[in-house]
Length: 303
Image (cartoon, rainbow, N blue to C red; front, side):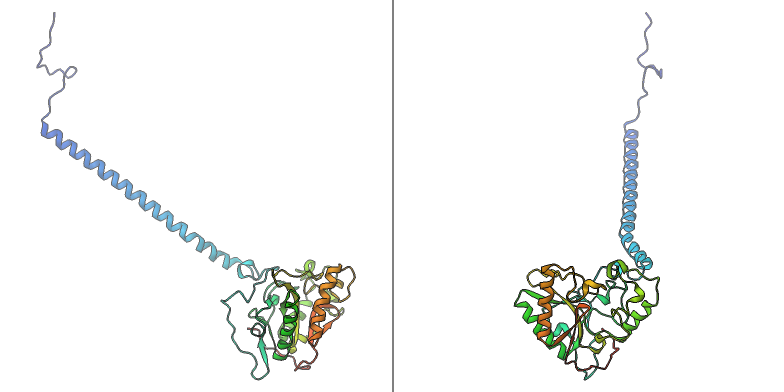
């Protein structure tokens, strides 16, 4: 029988012996390569994650910048969209410039009646034009001191009954009235018609007494207001919103519920008691009878 030599070097039947030192060197080199490759992969992964995080962090800023650049005037971005109105009493970032006419007796109403609610809508787009009105550079209510003191008594009386005044407009610059006039000459601009004058042709707003080339507000002793519940701050149902130009806004309008008539009566009684006279077409509009400037129309800005 044929037998193989144990020292045979036949590559198919035996492995050539390797020196032990060479094996160790080979193993160390392999280990170093493995470690270096692992570290390289880890560093690459970290760099990718860092780059991705940077892009994510920057995205909101870029999106915000794009929104500011592309948002039209009166958009929600600047708080002036139709149907919105900032509460000046809550926005501490807006400071009074205290540039009221010297010696004329004008005051910021919230300094006389801090408990009232202030919602100056001509500073916003929540009005019958749908944009901020000229001259309203800040959402503050300004009145003559005489009118402000009388109005404080009204608020005091209403608080005893569970209500509180909500001021929508007070002094109005003549430039704001001029803004109304300019708007009225643009028949195609009916952005807010459905909300504020759905049943009235825009061209008839002057003829019907809703608009005028001069306003009692510019004399500094006229105010537009409504009531809120003292406990909740919710607006009282008066049978129509302030500045709604239509028949339902008149004192004694038909179609009001018993509660709505009651609420209008409460407000009117409190106002008349303190020397204010109502305007027949607008339940929210009152002028101090003994106003200090019955024939002077001011034009300083609200700021």
